[in-house]
Length: 175
Ligand SMILES: CC(C)(COP(=O)(O)OP(=O)(O)OC[C@H]1O[C@@H](n2cnc3c(N)ncnc32)[C@H](O)[C@@H]1OP(=O)(O)O)[C@@H](O)C(=O)NCCC(=O)NCCS
Image (cartoon, rainbow, N blue to C red; front, side, top):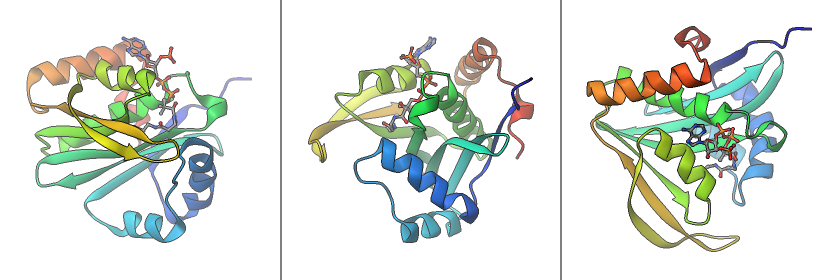
């Protein structure tokens, strides 16, 4: 049987429970229902889910402050990690950030999460500083990463290269 195509689509209130179940497996301090409702209502946020058939596999989101795009969440269900899903979601977020005129993107990542840092480095994010003991349970520093010049051809070419490498198409983003 052919596996259902991966769909990246806007997160909606009906997704909150399943997203919270994924976050409970991925984060030590997952957002509660009230936070999610606020996030989904805010025009400055853009949250998407990765879905295959009826199954929600992960999610990712941004917060837009003027022309800065902050990647606030990227989480993939542990059963579906290492399959390129986070790469697809980050690609989607950066395409979206460019489409709304974003100039730069930033995020925080645990200092101990080297693999996650490599995921972002693939897109051109570079470490620009650290926030001491930013995370709890367990305590960890945050590495602050930035990707500047989002609107330049160089960033566009890098995204296209990753799109090509992972076989993603813009049509998969049904937005
Ligand atoms: C971090 C997380 C989102 C990654 O999700 P994922 O779907 O497993 O990630 P992907 O498979 O798309 O990508 C990660 C890979 O990109 C890799 N990568 C980097 N450059 C690459 C390249 N040029 N070519 C191929 N892969 C590359 C990474 O090293 C990693 O490879 P690995 O799977 O072989 O270790 C997931 O582990 C998770 O949900 N963790 C818990 C929540 C969390 O920490 N979120 C991040 C908050 S900052």
